[in-house]
Image (tube, rainbow, N blue to C red; front, side):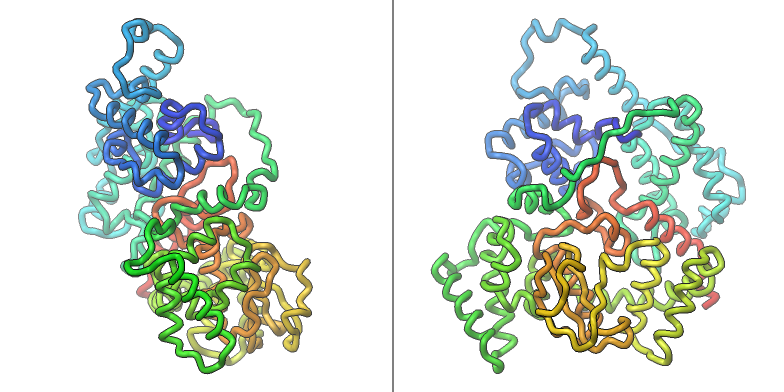
Length: 519
């Protein structure tokens, strides 16, 4: 439950491969999360190819053999996760009273007892059960009461409740009453649909245990070692492997392609970039065919400046869209516009009518944006409102996303020391609303100096994080938290986190409880 308690995955890694460097363990843990390993039983379904991005072949085989042996052992104890898949020697088996063994046994009993936990539906108030049975969302007050009852029963079962236990309980509850408890907005399930309930359960458990927890703890010292730039480029790329990508590490060239043919296509693209009458469809096709080489060069840690010279179309909207679609299976422009059409108006209504009464800073932001926006209308303007209001709502730094320059500013005139290393939109004008031109900076390089649409600039900024293996800056992790269920793209810290951040979950819960039909 605390930052100091190893996760299920980290415990399994430590027992099988204890001598791995910590950074490799981090990569392996991210990989296991991404392929869906959540419980002890899930280890039996891992294949060697799943671990190639994190481990050498022998290490991968060793780990898989040990994990599969554990899954087929009647006693599902952590001792069977040993470094060797061979049967233990007799001398090893006759030491039940050793500290490590007794500790593992105690933990195993704790896990087993929680695995048999039954949701106390019969103890819920009648009002709550009526809402659940009718598929209605319970009021925030009834939801809190539900969480209190469930945690009370969990604590009776065991005083040691892990995050995995809370997750399993939340999954069971949401599975039984998805219409009432799932994290859902306008028919779209957010993440796996149960993270907000997990968060509430964990917060309640922490509150209940607070009286027995020491008030002062020695916390781990945070250093700059967690920053993106301090991690070697190849390791940094590997850390990003698992987040939201379906085709991150391409192993084979396309059929009919060779290294030489890839080089020829790359040179053809460079020549076409110098011309103004190039065929966009031909460019898209060549970009798709050379995706293999593009990924190899990014994952080898090539610099942005090098990639700009070798793949100039990659830094144009349609070129990046091709790469992003191959990488993630998602069309970023279409997805953004679809979500704005589905949820934008209601999110803005919520911000403008409910949140302004709770947050003085947001009220000031809403008032300011109305003046700046004036009579402008359209999807692009709504997106600007949403982004800027969310920045204010989450109290985040606007300069981590935007840098404002004069409307006549050229790429060479931008003061690079004003920019973050992470992707930044350079706004040519006094505001996003009045600007007719935007630039995109990546690693303090202006990679595109004439983007005429705010939505295009936003999509390219967002896509750059994925295409070039870049961590989200921690001060901007909320507005870019369009999170898949597994993994994370936020720069590494020593604190544990949900895949969807708590403040995002709070907003989702508030939106879910909000009566949209009033608008």
